[in-house]
Amino acid sequence: MKHLPLSLVFLFTKLCFAQSEIPQNIKTSFTGTWFYEDNFHTNTIIIMFEKGKDYATFKDIGTGEAPTETLRAKVKGHLLVVPAQREKNDEIEMEIVKGKLHLRTRPAIWGRDGTILNNKSDHWAKRIFKRVKN
Image (cartoon, rainbow, N blue to C red):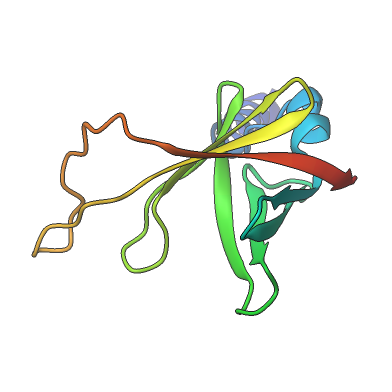
């Protein structure tokens, strides 16, 4: 009986600090190398999920001329979302529609004090990527 309270405390602690598991269907639909191309521009991105992490790793390779940018994307419903970071990236949302990755970006507007100003703009720049490989 002495071990019962200790066991309950251990179980409760484990439940409180456990990381939320990302659903497998989200992982399989987003994981892979994605490619975008138009007349004047190409872009390659890689999305991967590490075991035990509650985020996806989003690597923006771009055209390969500049260094790769690596960001963390959180799962929000059926979307992957990368919050804006000052002097690093704008707000990014990713969604899979009919096997293609729809990547939307919205410019972040920063105040003098370093906080993001309330951006109510519905102007999202959108690019549609095709999967190159898993």
